[in-house]
Length: 130
Ligand SMILES: Cc1cc2nc3c(=O)[nH]c(=O)nc-3n(C[C@H](O)[C@H](O)[C@H](O)COP(=O)(O)O)c2cc1C
Image (cartoon, rainbow, N blue to C red; front, side, top):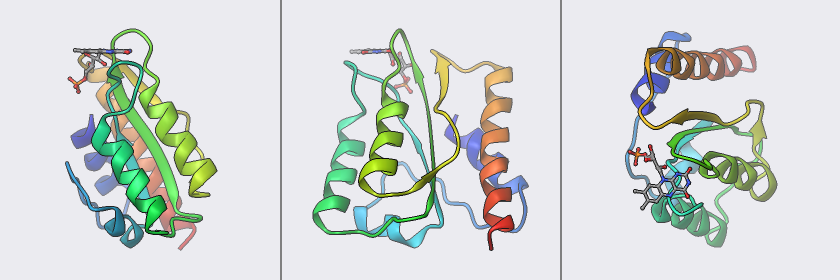
């Protein structure tokens, strides 16, 4: 899903896209948009994503008005992307314009197209607001 989102984001215009499996909290401040991929385990986000947000909060990383989106695969409840969006919106005051994009287990081609479309929309919105 993350690769498809990144591919779509690159197709959305002249934007630099980074696909990271791990990122330091301070580095979040370098980006205009942050798209989080989070599978749901035990009704939670993965611990490394929680800790990244926790670190960003403790260190006062400013993410205000950056664009945010979240996606992830799930099995039966799929809370993780929703929680990521809540934190981005309510704690970091990021701009969230998209509902969470959820794939039940392995994403099929249709879902990967939706991932590409999500990435593309975010890029296009960045270009529009530049
Ligand atoms: C130990 C374990 C706990 C899980 N807990 C949940 C859960 O609480 N809610 C849910 O929707 N899916 C849950 N799942 C299903 C995963 O979210 C699903 O398999 C997802 O596709 C995993 O994505 P990944 O392969 O990218 O890690 C769980 C899976 C495992 C193995």
